[in-house]
Image (tube, rainbow, N blue to C red; front, side):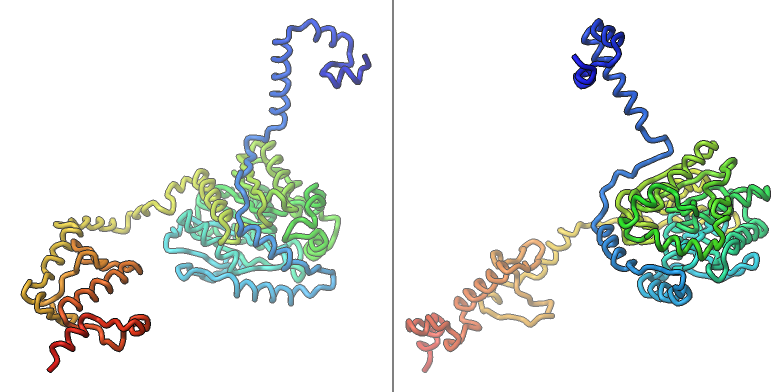
Length: 487
């Protein structure tokens, strides 16, 4: 028998191994096969920090992906007017992204950098989220990013600071990292405790968040409590396998556009591997806890995976979440159920690392300078149930027998003389409630008609009889009775 046949039938090409296998009992061979399969599965297992979110993409996500494929067909060139394109994006942002009325926006200047405070009624001034917005270092979406920051603030009872860092190509590298680091230093100088500071960045903002951590470590300044990176762009060389694998399949990003935008931000290719341009190549030693979220089929997926691997090798507390079927930066789209779930995961991660134990449903803790809130009012006790009150009301509305026999009626609003609801007429005799369905209405009409014919009050006019009855010559009993008593 040939060696190929041995391997195909479960054997081995080595004679000694074949002899040893033939001498092994069948039960032992099965145990060895099970152990080999367990070893292969263990080698394919994800690391402990890697979590795949096992959900099915929603219909809204599919609709958003289809819209983005149509809306992002335009290709950028080195001659593109970025200023005019930026104005178009900001106009679309103002039209389609509206902030709730309870969100407060306050413009400030920190460290010589324009910024904006985002707060909600649940915000506490000591809890600060430094949100570094994305936009490929060249664009901004004020309402969209402020809305995402507000939703995170509501979950964490915090407020967010969004620096308005300088944009490319008017201000290339290192303008944006300088502004972000200056804002962080200004917060420390204003008396904010590092354990109450959280860095959050999406896309290009994730790049700036890691660069800020790198600069903080070089300057020997205190780190924030943790950092959250949402679909971060961390490798300016763009050599990740997902860049080529999902080019054309990503509904939002295209490799040709990314190459043009990279040239706007970093004019010199020599800086592509600089740790302050591509923080993926920086050292992660001593970094605070990191949370990375990315789409499973987006072009920047592998950059998040590689960053999580580097952080885990350096001993950093890191978590990586890959979401199936979502577009790049899906957390900004607040109407997606995946975005709501992702924000809850962000809030859980931040609470565990900062000690902000109160969630959105927990009552706020009163500060020593403020008096405690008054106790809630006691619930109102009902002496009689609703059914008892309805029965008493129906009993009080009954009509005397003599008045009913005379066929007298009172107008609506006279409380001293009202007609009793009749059983079988679509009226509940206990509660006095009238039925609203078509059957109840037909039943009430039949009962009222029979009562009118019986009492002789309000009988139908013979001229309003149906055509078929007029053809047959039938008349109403009330009409005949009137004709008999007429003089």
